[in-house]
Image (tube, rainbow, N blue to C red; front, side, top):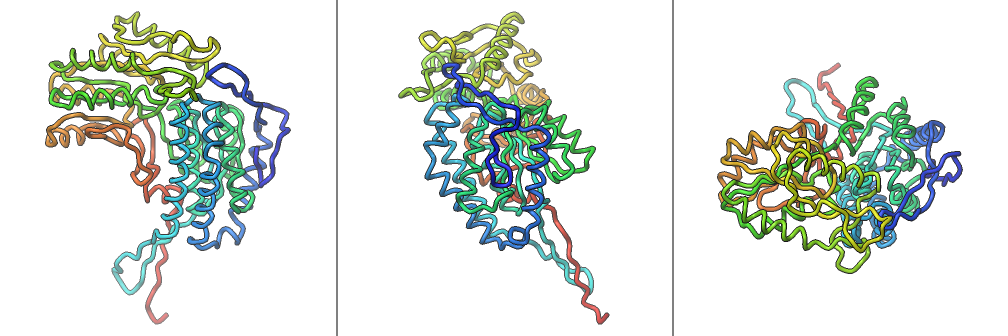
Length: 476
């Protein structure tokens, strides 16, 4: 791990990570306990209070962020391989995620240098000013499905805002975060400003969010863990940003461009083996268009090449862990027992390493929206198909979920797209596209999908607190 600029290899506890493509051990990583968490938070607090960082001008902080981006870009293939070996994403997607992480650091370098504050109109004989100041120590906790993306999305704006960061990556994918920490030091970031402490949620994560030196918490992961973190944050009265689960409705009206929609629906659920918070895992198709659409979609699902992540032409790699694949298999079995109809997939592919965690793109129809498969997040390549009759029926079904992260709409009728998009309870709605993501667009969820908005210009303000300065203009 990385604490106060020093590599710590011996903590008395070890994390073992595995390549999900073949089940082989990747490499052991030191695991943090309470002592290491305490050391990391204390180092971050000291670094945040240093005048050399606290008083650093915005354009100088921006220069450091740009240097980190340069370092990541120079090591893009190494970073992509670290992610691929631990979570099984295909090589092309890993490279794209490195490029996205680099772009995130560059974006927040620009935001840091150019974002101003406000001077509200006076309502008396005074001037009023608003300034924005860092919280101090930010705890950033990231998931295993897209570690490079999530770590950049938290670390870059938190540093741009003037904080120090203690980053706890998932115990499944610690290596990319450690590499980012080393790159930041090489780029000139003062020691202690980015500390990386791999460990389990039960030990390192719980100790981190409860530590009195942590003044803000940013978490991406499952809803149950997010709820526990929110409870601790509430007891401590510290702000928290939570990006949690989803069961996103992907909606196809009967006037949609069917071929474009089929491709987008397939990519939206099967890309990354469905291990995405915004995966379009509930497909709503207008009843008249359902039979032909499902035929095309099932054909496309069967054509997806499931292979080793670095195999030429691979479109889908393994599930990130064997344990998670077993969970997916159990949910599919339950759905079929509940009366679901298997339209594609539903099993492990042939011809791949038996110790790999592969699973075929799966489509299930014949269930109701209140079924377990339609309501619970699978976080895998499993699509639940549901019919709808009209807008009123659709909106009622689509919003009948504890989640509200994302949604997609396919229709040629832009007035209808506007009505439905406004009625959907989701933080992002794509219209005639899906999973079109941008660091410049705020992102977050409704309901149990989270609290707060990351990304965008306001994503830096997430890691700052405002202060009002009021200057009296009287004679004293």
